[in-house]
Length: 508
Picture (cartoon, rainbow, N blue to C red):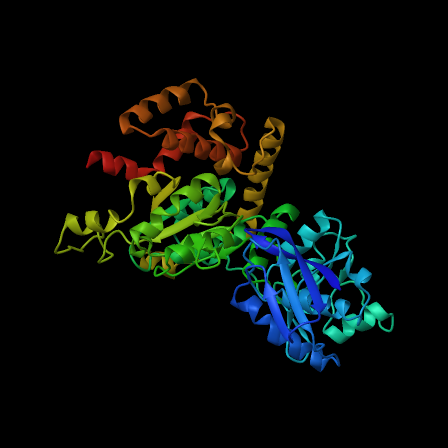
């Protein structure tokens, strides 16, 4: 007899149906799993055997063959334990096989028959909903699955016995409830930042338009402090963004107790991170930091300390909004629409340009250190500012800085203007930084004085086409913060002031 159970395999954030076929028949007493299983799937034989025994069932003294179809697609992960166990139970008549036809199943088994949480339950639930099936998953992952579809049939048992009792009618499993993570502590507030008015203004502009930001300054000037307060002025995730972010976090196994959060991701990897850790990859082509920061912020502190090859691997995700991992036998794409925020010292000793400081290596210390960042990567950063050291007067004097709440209100208003504009233009993006080149000149068309200024400055600084469009996007954000429809000369001049490194490079 052959029983069938539906489960899933993951290709990026997409859940692909997999048919688990179980045959129990005469022959040598053996338990085989075929269909390109990896080590975790092959080891499921022992977990299933022990879990069935702990649940009061024993494998029959027959030949048990499990086929994971399609057989030419690699199968990875421990979530195949539960579908294999249920397939065997249906094949030997322990549970009715027709009860499993309307469900996709995934879960890891303990040796005592309990179910452990697995990664990827949310995309699996959405994939099951797309093919008109319900979902069976571990209890710890039930609230995560409940976000996929409010009308979807979901069973989230604690153990094999509990699930078998549900099918027999002796115990009824209630549908899990979708839950959000609580926010036990408030985010760091901008009111705690003393001085640095220019940097605060740049941070607000970057948040309003989703622009990439680079802060350069000596140690202790507050660069990391400013970056850590960016999430406090960003708007919460929309429902669609929430699901996108949570699907990636689910695949990475980073959803605590299956609870989702509406806060935008803020990822800050160490500068020793490898290319696979930052962009994604590895043996199983997992999402990297750039994808885990999707719809949020990727903060790279000590930017020149990252390997140049690792930094340059960010160029394609920053431009296209996705991280593509190509292997000889498959290709995986993860969404990676991020806001890059970076901080760096002006030179290796960290104090170049400060009054009273003289470096023994002179200008070479600055040029060698900053040359670790390639020009094409810098060209993708809209806002580049100098963050000078804070004086004692700034620290001692009373703080009169605006709170994050007031700044966040202006950011939310500017983003609402952008969203309405893109809806009218029929463009699928939410911030000015994401706007495609085809609509930039339409939505950010300057007045006559601004156009003359832009033409003059673009020729003098030899801006690239990307740099030209990014200046227009930044000017559009400045106009949105001012609440005006027309981009003026003042907005273009301020936008150009945030590309100060272009001026210094051309002068050199």
